[in-house]
Structures are given as C-alpha cells and as structure tokens.
Image (cartoon, rainbow, N blue to C red; front, side):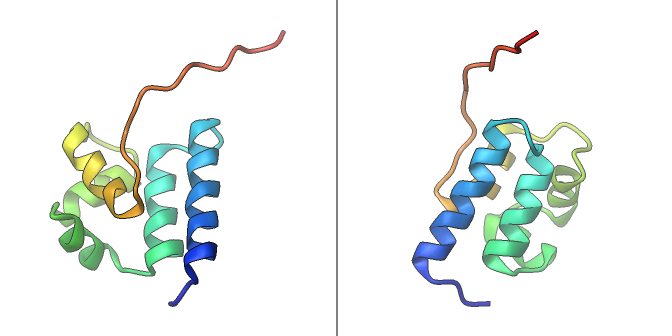
Length: 92
C-alpha cells in the first residue's frame, strides 16, 4: 500500500476529526489508522509501536484499560498523541 503524503495526511486528519467529534471511538480510530494508512497487520504494527499484540487488540476492541503510554505509542507514528479537548455542548 503506497499513499502519497498528501492523501496520507488527509486520511489521518479525517480520522482525527471523526475521533474528536465523537463519531468514532479510540479503538476504531486506531484500527482505521493501522489498516487504512499503514496497511500493516496487528503483529507488524504492534512491533513497530513497541507494544504487545494483546495490548493492540484490547485497544482496537476498546477493552481493558490501556495506559496513556500505550495509546500514545499507537498514535505517535501518525504524528498524534492523546490530549484534552473541550466537550461539545449539546443542543436541546
């Protein structure tokens, strides 16, 4: 899988926006980044991020309680990290 830098950046931004807006959860975001941007299997991606495959599986399935370090490890290859965002006010 070879994406141009521009397409890769747009894809990462779209996933980041969906995550920030609450359209998708962290697990879906990580899986989409792994599959759509890198094209790597879980084993390859976990090795690249220096986490266990089990930890990656838990993150992608939104199970367990991943550490901030684990989450930052999977986002780092995409130039992202966990952070604090303002809650959106609901209209109603």
